[in-house]
Amino acid sequence: INDNGGTKEVADFPLFVDVTQVVSGVQNGFNAGTYTVSETGIAGYTATISGDCNPATGSVTLAVGDVKTCTITNNDQPGTLIVNKIVINDNGGNATANDFTYQINGDSPVSFEADGSNSQVVNSGSYTVTEPSVLGYSTSYNNCTRVFVPNGGSATCIITNDDIAPTITLNKVVLGGPASVDSFGLTI
Image 1 (tube, helix red, strand yellow):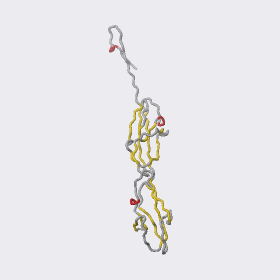
Image 2 (cartoon, rainbow, N blue to C red):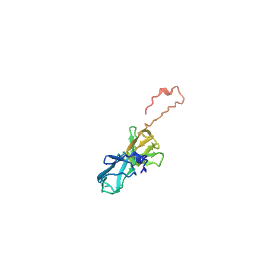
Image 3 (cartoon, rainbow, N blue to C red):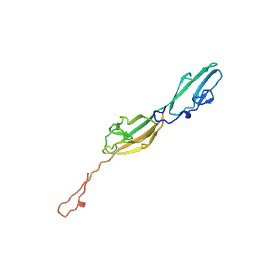
Image 4 (cartoon, one colour):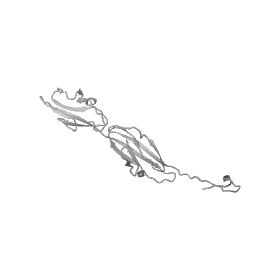
């Protein structure tokens, strides 16, 4: 089942009855006895066993003449995109993380949590995280463009906002007289 961006197929999961490799959908002959069905799993997929096999252990007992079927279903897991916010207020700013929002692939803005860390469950794939600008703050991104989130895994984007130091321009005008602008000391 690839409903969260996964791309694996049945052939990607080797199947076994005890140590004997078998092919999906093909009836295989075995002597009477107890066997365990299994597969080589793939990270990012959850396996469930059903049918005539024990769902917890994969064991099946065959008597003479039995025809039993076991099914292993693999379902791709969603991933997690973590977006962290760092706010630097070293020039008189007072914004906090929840004063900012971000967008994933241009979707609707999402507000940051108070602690500055948001986790979103997403399908496996690539994502770009951006942030609308906030007056008085510069923005820098770390691992926020084409971030790949694998099935069952996570990726982190960090957005840092630093308050911009304000500036003052002081203009001196001298009207008449022999003094010039350089004749006056200016202070703020």
